[in-house]
Amino acid sequence: MSELRIVALGSPGEVTEGSDLSDLVMAAARERDLVLVDGDVLVVTSKVVSKSEGRVVPFDGSDEEKERLIAAESRRIIRRRGGLRITETRHGFVNANAGIDVSNARPGTAVLLPVDPDRSARGLRARLRERHGVSPAVVITDTFGRAWRHGVADVAIGVAGLRAILDLRGRPDQNGRVLEVTEIAVADEIAAAAHLVLPKAAGTPFAVVRGLDPSMFGPGSVADEIVRPPSGDLFR
Image (cartoon, rainbow, N blue to C red; front, side, top):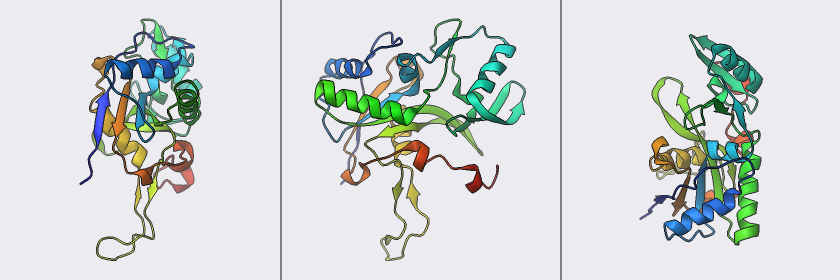
């Protein structure tokens, strides 16, 4: 029987521009007496990645400054309602207010999404391999709302060493019927599962997922595999 284990690591303390996330991850794992191994998946919230990459900007809390930041981080505004903007970010993500976040940010600042989350994931994985001799897959997450459903869930915005999509098209189901449309968003499912042990007030941005089927590992990209282009979107 398959079994999956998800472990939240300890708090890394304050993360600032230039912080080495690989060192912070390993220190947090040691606090939990957890030894990272190849075949693990390291889940990292986007905010800590953004902070380490200097994606923190001044923000005075005004509507005018909010509009300016949203416009700067967006390809376009899709919908407006009150102070809410549904945007298409420069990455191609469709989300609220271009992913700009002030929760758990220092007063007078806002945190922007990483410029290239897939690249950030690859960089962290490479750093772990070079400095610590271990190469887990990496999933960078952010919290998104979902069209037609209440509530938010974490999704993957960057991956490395993991298939973002598990394509089952052309394979038989248990009754022998050939699957025609089934593509499983593996990276999003891992992100949502890890969110259950990483509540916003917990103070830790790291979790380790252990026990994933080996078939789910391999080259992957959220930008190339998960983000749906407007040409394939029935609603845009």
